Length: 266
Image (cartoon, rainbow, N blue to C red):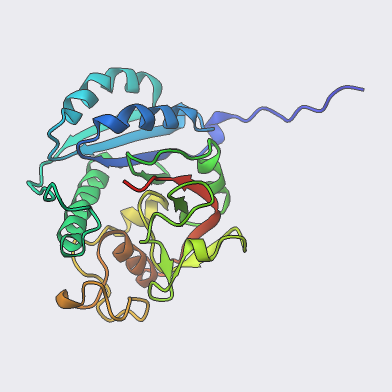
């Protein structure tokens, strides 16, 4: 009796995906970043890469320039953008320091929007991926696509089975995060998303969905009350602002609390 073999997948049937990553002082992460991309269970000829480097002091841009030819041999298309925002966190302050959250997130939103504008061509999907994500399953992109949702994010944790790393993915005005939804349905509705790994249908970006570099949703019933930026007014910025903007455009955001990717606390 002959063994059963699944038919081979035709790579041309897979949708094209643009992986977008803002980078800053990232030389220590680049090898892992590209190694993990190379492990994806997805044909490299259907993946485009877009990187925006800003304000690095460790040679990140030069290191990326050195890798462009090799990357372009492997992937469908590769874009490298240089943009300096002239913003630096104080060396003694962690990036989650409350007084610095708003200006840091504004700069990151601007960087994301500039990268999107420069890199998106005819791809069908955009996968936002942080350069310092340490681990994710090779099938993660296929699992995100298989949901059929136009905005969907996996569960970013500090270690496997551990607490949520990305506190920007939430619902119920920030009271419920993904680790509180673990063990239930594989797909849950969210009001806001994080950007450590975020899949967005490219047409939503083409139709105006951006990362607001300002407080968006001042009158939104889904915004947090009180907002952590209450001294600046009500609303959300960057990825969380994108979540509220998507709702205003008629689209829901979704999370996969049982599909974990790892970003250590550092």
